[in-house]
Amino acid sequence: MPNVKYRLANIVLKMDSEKKILILGVNGFIGSSLAWKILKRTNWKVLGMDLGDSKILHCLQEKNFTFHRGNALEETGWIESAIKECDVVLPLIAIATPSLYVKDPLRVYRLDFESNVEVVKMCVKHSKRIVFPSTSEVYGLCPDAEFDEFESNLTLGPVAKERWIYSCIKQMLDRLIWAYGKHENLKFTLFRPFNFIGPKLDDINNPKEGSSRVLTQFAHNIINGKPVKLVDGGKQKRSFTFIDDGIECLLKIIENKNGCADGEIFNIGNPGMEFSIRELAEMLVELIGTYPKYAEAAKNAKIEVVSGDDYYGKGYQDVPRRVPSVKRAEKILGWKPTTDLRTALKLTLDYHLLGKDYELSQ
Ligand code: UGA
Picture 1: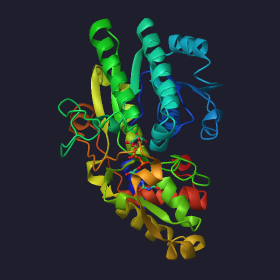
Picture 2 (picture 1 turned 60 degrees about the horizontal axis):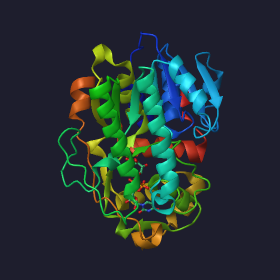
Picture 3 (picture 1 turned 90 degrees about the vertical axis):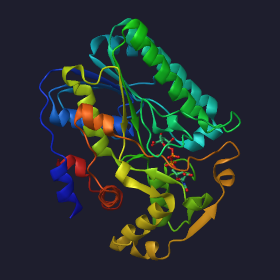
Picture 4 (picture 1 turned 45 degrees about the horizontal axis):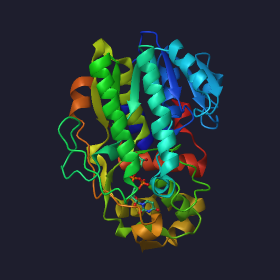
């Protein structure tokens, strides 16, 4: 009964202090889920900007939500006045799919780096608190068993391996924000999501090969009778984190009780959810087989091994494993992840295969 267990673990208290939160990229995976939880659990106001509204249709009905449709690369004037109006700024606009780091690194650079540097500077200028999404990718090839926010080395591969451009951009932004915090009193928190998964990650219906994150790609291939491709055999591991666990942590960061999150860096991940990519593929085949409409497709599912170079191109280099230490979030924020992988996958599959959106029933 994954849903019952999940709901019991997911109760949080209403937050009372009033805030206005700016979410740039509110229609993204994290942005849409965060906006909804804020609107349902708090009395905070949310001002959101994005190119589209497909994932936030339910938010649009809420009185505390205002939406602006726009392109962040073109509407810096709007962004600056929105920053002036709000208390906390979450710049969530970024390209975060590895195939694009390799195929279009300059687009990643312009959007992820250049436009976010401007946002950081505006937060400095208007003395606004920034809650910035760093990434698990900043740890790169760090050999530590668990990555620690203040101790682990951030270790990247060669320049010709363009996969690292995203990691390098995020690391530079982390360092810039840190420096503004230390030398110009910018109030900030950096958070590092570790392979967040959940219903609205990527569109399961039409991902082009390599264009979405692994869970969406695998589910798409299985239900459409295409072979699941295990890059380099699927021995590499990830620590998957269910979106709602991540959002619970983010709510605590935004709440910032007694300033506890100021000047902090938090890994947001689930060290207990480390699985190899092959294990993920096998679990997905098994679970999809429990949906009558897709049982046949799951029974016939084929798993193929491909090389990273063939799948992504020459500039790809993989991370063999990455496990977060979440001791800091536990100690300072009193947060711990609670959702296991089967539950996370089941809720995600229910959304895509049965059209059930658990979020709306909360
Ligand atoms: C991701 C992305 O960089 C970001 O979304 C994010 O910052 C970060 O990690 C995170 O979520 O923490 P990665 O974990 O490599 O990077 O993302 P996926 O595309 O989901 O790939 C996971 C693994 O599955 C990789 O080893 C990849 O080679 C493998 N994979 C992917 C396959 O074996 N087959 C596929 O069809 C797709």
